[in-house]
Image (cartoon, rainbow, N blue to C red; front, side, top):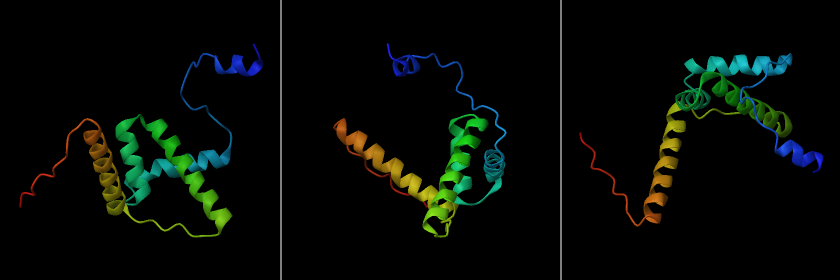
Length: 118
């Protein structure tokens, strides 16, 4: 077996992120942890991740998203314009409905929206 095959077959002992002395990573994680009170799209993203997984992983995922945003801003020279929490949640809702519609069609069903109750 080659070294690459040995690496692929290695047993994963933990999925936890490792402690780091990288100050940029620490700063991004601190910024991500403070998103919980933010009324921005990133804050909504963080809260949605926290509902799905434990907080350390959600913080790491948000820090990674922040790093990608910063990299994009630095390489393209464009500003990041936050659309806000309401627009993020509406786009998420549309994505969920679209995915459910596709699954229903695949199974031979059709989704019909419920009438809104006033």
